[in-house]
Length: 442
Image (cartoon, rainbow, N blue to C red; front, top):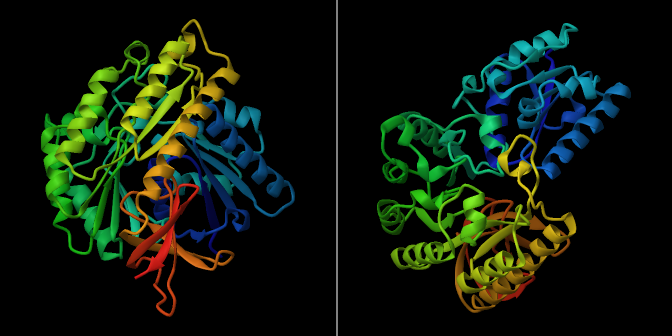
């Protein structure tokens, strides 16, 4: 009887893609895949270890599986992903019920590792992280109509607050041919939206080809039949070129949406973060982007409470948010991560101050988003149908302005004309409630 394997994948979409590659390799090796890890013989936890809250979630998930193991409902627990890579010696020492602790460089060996685990061994496998496969078959965990397309691994930016280079290593682009081939397979499988991701998406190709190649890659992706939307996440402001903006403006399939994590607006704080720019240069960049791409939807992420952030620095960030009026924004309190330069900086900001500042930014942003939502009333938008809310008795989906899981939804009725999930429909907007749009199918 085949061994049943299930996975809990935590953290970002990039880690989700790694989990999909892991599961496909197990399926190809003859293991039976189980949608619910709690019903499997072997439960894999594909962990996140980026910031404190993510680490806590990963540990909590492992401990829940430990309880199931003690109850005899699952047999073995395997821990992989960023937390395992980052805390190699501690995983099994702190949680001895874990049967295997595996680094990301061992992802290509996962089938053999589970074989060892089932034979009673307790392997701890941490090869060079650069041995992690950059591509491979995938067992998609997203609905069939959209998929993430990971174009690179690792990061070279060395922001002082970030542990990603420690965990994931340096920036490594995939070959353009392998990306296009994978995108063609995803489209043939029904994917209508491709979401292009990396730690620094706009840097794509610099290490491999000696120049920024994202514009060329996007042109090739736009030529693939069946794909309707191509979305860009995690672009770095330093590598936003006019060539990239021109491609985004001219290619119909590229949604006019870009995720541009800026982290702060104070030049002093940005320098301490080892990031370039200041409020003036970032404001100019955004104005240029909006001029080049009319109707651009701009998402960013910000950090409050970075070491040494003064009331003046925070006031500058707050005013920046008010002035720029981002379409989408996430704000997080700084997380002091061991092993990063920022963790050793003086003038660490108190937790309650960091959190209060983040709340203020998010309150500002919710007001901006509500105003932008109300401006949509009476307009018709294209919505990718994603589900049906039984309690509200209406359908829901996303517009070009919304990325899965991180942005909002459109809720709509469709009297006598039921859409299927994955179908693009036209919706007339009637209202905006708590930043989510509501309307009726036309």
